[in-house]
Structure formats: structure tokens, C-alpha cells
Length: 470
Image (cartoon, rainbow, N blue to C red; front, top):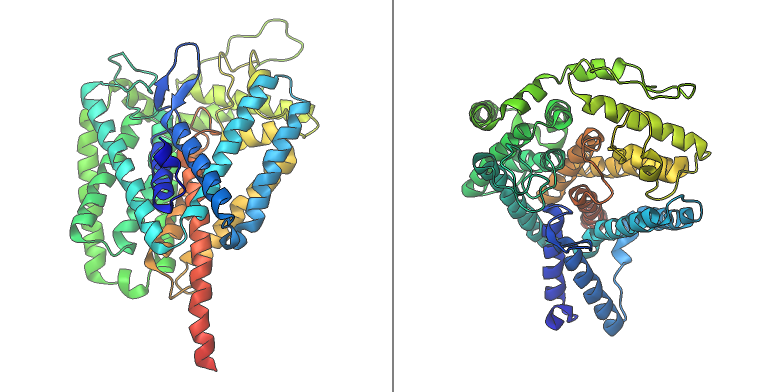
């Protein structure tokens, strides 16, 4: 154990990659202790890495943050967000909930900032990508294995049962589906943007097929029927802007692309029809009913009533959407009652307990509402502003016209992160809780690292041009 804490850069890089690997495997994978909390592998790796960094900085007196300049305002925002969360503990109704939440928030923000801290060059970027791809491949391969055998890991809510449900290393199907949708843009873009070997492309292609199969088998309607079409349209729309015209506008590449897509559709359809459970098939078939569910009343219970009425069966036949709708409606009421300051870190669950229309649910099941209701309008506006700022910075790197000399790895990272984060606008409404949904924070961190690397590459590329002009 002590050797891991030695202030040697290779050891720290190893710990960083271990932390990233366990983060991608989900926030619940670990060793449950009776009567205590779950000791997750991610937390262990995070603590070891933090301790190793502190030892390294104390011994060398050189915390290296100079390259953070391109993201300095985002870094300042994360500090302000955490400070606001800490201040909100003074008005929370449930202090233990608040302390637990800001612990998660601080951990996830540091996880995000660790990416630009460690990924200082294209070589380190490639190493990190290999780790992330390897872990994701394990996730989807085990997902297919789980669908075939009904064998669930202890981290799954279905552990110890023979239920036909696919969760892989996650707690539930929605978490797995959201993680898959976050990763799919990276796989799709890698097929055409990265200088991969033939074996590399075949491996990425097979992993993508298994990932799509897992996505549909989960039965997550928001990710399968709404998130996936969104990232598909975005990717197809971005191709003319992120690839040289000669690379995509030719008969050979168009034919190969159409052939690969057709083959993938046939294989995924075959796997899905074989592995998809009847109840999941029925659930996916009700996707169009979601629109009708949302058109219904958003006020299930009037304050003048003494008994909460029975909620009618929604048009989709599934109360999930109706419950989420009432979670949002109740959350907005809590926000107004807090004078738009927010109910305080993690306290939306305290107020949601017993709220009308949500049955036994307390988590708001929506990342955007989680930020808004917990922290109020100020933090939400700042967060959305920086979210859009990340999009703009990634677009500047992704565009061939703006950065023609950029490394293909950095451009690929920019395109992939941009599509993944856009897809998460829908995917963020699927997980039961997002504050410790580590795959989302990994994509945030990777995007920041790409922005920092892209800014440095752009600056380096301009120097020779200026010297040549002289």
C-alpha cells in the first residue's frame, strides 16, 4: 500500500487510470459492509490518488496547475459551486442528507478536474482512451452475458434473482443505458476519425454492436427512443464540418459506411429479438405514449383535498413517466418556496418524501432538476452557462475550418464529447440519481482535458506560422 503513495509520476498515472476505470464501472461497484456504507472501488482509488498527489506536491513544492488557464473560469465555478453547497447547509432541513450530498459533489468535481491535471499530452490522452475503451468493452460484454445467463453482480438491484434484466456493473437498467449512450459517440467517431489499425476498427465495431444491443435490452425508453436518435442526428449533421470533404464525400467511403451500418442494424436486431424479454419489449412499444403522459395534468393533488386521489393509469400503461412528471412539478414548488435559493444540498429527497403523485420515490430522477432545486436559480444558470461554454470550446476544436492542423485524437475527443454531452440532455433524465453517476463526470472531465490540449496545440501551431511570416 505504501508503494502506491510514493510520489512517482508513473504510480500516480496508474492510480489515475484505476480511478477512471472504476468510475466507468459505476458508482456502486464495491464491497458492501453490514451496517456501514458500501466501500466502492472508485472511492478507494480516489482516496489513494488524492493522498499520492498531496505527498508529491508537498515533497516537490510544485503543484502543476499552469496549464489550467484555458479552463480557469470553469475551475473557479466549481469552487464557487462547492462553497455555495457548503453555505446551503445553514438552511437545509436534513443536515445528514446535505453533508452526504456535498461529499459526493466535492468528489465528482475533483474527479472532473483530475482529467486536465493528468492528461497533459496526446500520448497520455491515448493511454487514457485505451483504458476507457477496455473498461467499456468489459461492461457491454458482461451485459450480453447477463442477458443470456440472468447472472447479476452484487452491485445490481437484481442480484440473487433470476429476473431477465440487464444492468451489467450498474445498479439498474437506466444507469447502464445512460452510460452506453455516453460512450456511443466515442465509438462512432473513432471509426472514421482516428488512425486505427484494421484490428482496432473491427474491435470498435464489434463493441459498438454489443453496446447497441445492451441499450435496447435495458428497455430504457428515454435513451433508446429519444437519446439515441438525437446523438445519431447530431453525428450525421456534424460530419461535413469535422471531416475533410475528400474523406467522406466519395463513393467508396459512403458505400462502406452504408454497408457497415446495415450490417450493424441486422446484427443488433437479431441479438435484440433473441435476448429481449417480453416485458421489456412491451415497455419499449409504449414509447409513443410518453407524449400523452406528459400532456396530462401536472397537479395530481389539490391542497384543498384531504385524501390524495388515486392516479389514473397513464396512456403509456406505465406510471414511470407520470411519476417523473410529478417529481418535477413538486420540485418546482419546492424551488419557489425556497425563494429560488434552492432547498439546500441533497435536500430535495427530504422534501419529496410523501409528496403527492410520486408514490415511494424521493429522488427527483432528473439531473437538471436536481441542480436547480437543490442549489437554486443562480447555480443552475451558471452551470448551464458553462455547459454551453464547453460546447462552444469543443466546437471550435472540432471544426476543420477553424483548426485545420489539429491532432486527429484531439478533434475526435472534441466531437465525441460534444455529441455525448448533447445526448445527456435527455440521458440526464434517466438515472435515479446523477450526483454520483460517475460516467457522466468522466465525460465532463475528458471534455475539459480536450479543451486544454486543444488550446495548447493551437498555440503551438500558430508559432511557426508567425515565424514564417517574419
